Length: 314
Image 1 (cartoon, rainbow, N blue to C red):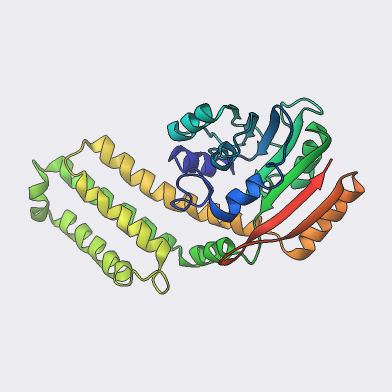
Image 2 (tube, helix red, strand yellow):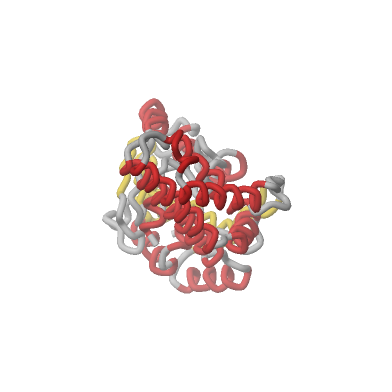
């Protein structure tokens, strides 16, 4: 699981939503991060984020103007980008990112954290073990704040649609035809001669056919958004025809790897989405294991349900 997310985070995305929230969480999600923290009276607040990704929660936390010791833990290879690191430095947030570490068994000391936070993350782990770990590291009276994927949210709906749109055979066809063109360039003196190469022309014609198939309808409501994105990114290959063979090969390999990894990430987002019965079972388990004030509800923005809010006190 961590490999496909490590690849994703290495691309610099701050959140699991790609181009959305490109500057960190805003709106209702940012409000969730900061809710109940505004009245904090501690000189320094210790906050640990389970499954932190590239630290999107730090943007709203920086807006609190509080002295915060933040630890972000993630199974994937994650790191802060320069903008987030600079924001934290300017805001006085002491940041420690712990990559390649499962939140079921953290390096944190017992009774050391005021808040354990997770935004669309802890549900990817063994959640019962991870919540038990949160209880271990929280101080008496410490707070758990989790925003989880909801099976009826727009994210779940989009992920289901993406899975239905994924066409493995056509992704392979894009890869094969781009490789044919790349191999032809080895035989030729310049990209201008590609039209003289029969195999390259056949491959180009097949690429054009895939463009006609998918790019003829770019309406997000009716087109195949997943394959539109893949084919569109594949066309960027023709901008690097003069690059060395190794660079062209890497582009083609990365193109297919990202689409197949994207499918796996969408599948995971569907698989970890909770319904009400699952949330109720989890809340009961937490109460039975000593948590206080366990409460969950659908969390909404202006467009509808965006997740489950789960809160508790240690």
